[in-house]
Amino acid sequence: QDVVKTRYADFGEVMDYCRRSANPVGRLMLHLYGDDDARHLAYSDAICSSLQLINFLQDIAVDYRKNRIYLPQDELAAYHVSEAQIAAGDARGLWHAMLHKQIERARKLLQAGAPLGRALKGRIGLELRVTIRGGETILRKLHADPGCVFHDRPVLTRKDWLLMLARSLR
Image (cartoon, rainbow, N blue to C red; front, side):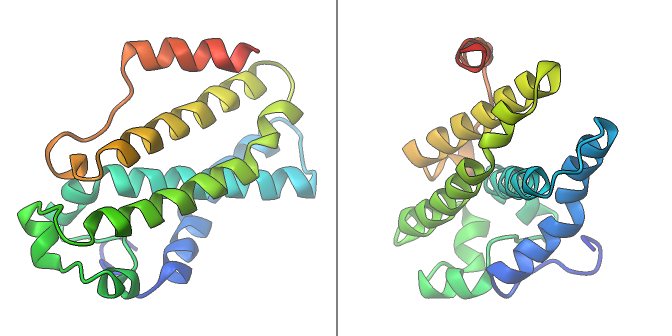
């Protein structure tokens, strides 16, 4: 799909991408652990979609250089953010407001799926809780500096990993 579709008209199209790219990974993991609970599958879909959205936000500049924009076109237009602005790495105007909307939506999806991290026992539950904390950490970094996607892609540091693990063990 990334070869033939490089723009997404609205959030529904972005979520359709997630349903076919990210969500099957979570469903496969649950299947490998013998978990076919419908509620767990829904939690997994929310987490995987959120993580995909977070990755899109981290990689706005990277994806643009590949001629891909995963931000909904209708929302870019509503916030008066143009492709030229993305190309220039320009975080002025309504960029912050637009990105904050994307961040909040990804955060809500991540929170909606978070109960799965406690529902799953053992190593997979711990790994999922750390993964959720990782998504939250990237979202906090994006929120603190919405322009960072153009000059300093947010990543997880060693300190972040230690804090995420410690919080996930509680």
